[in-house]
Length: 235
Length: 119
Image (cartoon, rainbow over the protein chains, first blue to last red):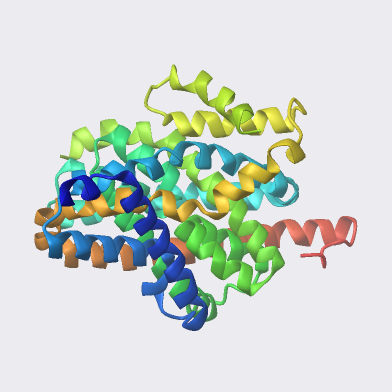
């Protein structure tokens, strides 16, 4: 009896949706606390629940897999965001594209440097390379490079939290005061979560940040296969 | 409306090379919008619903993390350092590059047309 309840997809679907919505409520009350970011909150609570009750992840996935089905359409839907913000790209394309392309290369070099420093194997490198892009694209990149997908999700989410939290301070210290530059910097380094911060900062920042999520994601996808020979050489 | 995206999707599943299928779908949909094959209004409703609730779709992937606790136990502090350092440096780097290139371009346009004040 208990078994059939546990194996019912509806239980896990309701639980996931419930926790996600609850986090949204808590977030309204304490907007500064990154733990109440709905994605973070739902993941942490479900892991704790499964560990505490000794229920396996496969049991959770009887319901959980329904959510995963939507990852691809949601990624495809990012095209609409890109289309809506394309006017901004046209206006400042030279600055934005050179900033993001050089940023992605710079970021890749940093990941390699750290991977060598900490003596990670190539799976770990592949897990970390897409950490600054939106989860939907990062999952695909990590998977195709042989990374640990679930760890990529965690790293991406955490990166977003860091970006959103430190963004304004970083801009102040390093005197980055141009709204376009702020938006692109937030979107390219910390994807959607950085973008929520960018939207708070202003309309231009928000639009630039939203645009940069997609552009950065696409650039990483294009450049990622090029890292394979480098990875083979280094590891 | 959903089937419109679905159709675009089905084309891409076949081409499962190194590029994630979802990204091919993204590019195809963007091209369709750009070339006016599709209008933004046709896909806006479902698209906005999908992107604004995107977080929840990744919950199961994140929960999958519990199978990797072994890896994490040894490396969590290294990962933390990497995440904090690379994210901040990336932000500074991109911000500075965009700001300086835009600054250069602005100077040119101000001289030429005087429309530089619109950010």
